[in-house]
Length: 120
Image (cartoon, rainbow, N blue to C red):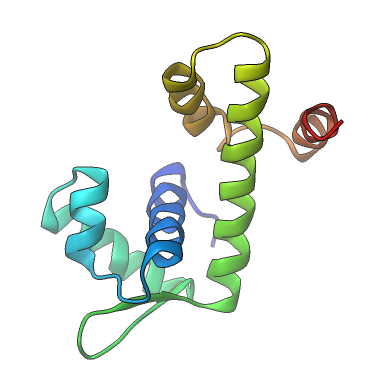
């Protein structure tokens, strides 16, 4: 199943929240993203069906191995692209917002070229 941009955003959010805390629930995702409970509930169901997250009986969200690999890739893209834009003189807030959009559509080839420039 190909993950759409919105699914990628939810997955990345769960990854970021899991880095801060071992206990992440749907309500935490709602608060972090500013989305409604029904929207997050639907996304959680889709991510679970895709085998990208697990949901415990208590409602805690954890990434599967596949989900973590995908989320790490997205997070790396976001971080590297943000740094790249800042290095070009873009203010941090704009760079972060733009990176959030770019990370979902950039090719692997272009991303690797940016990554090389940032890591020099």
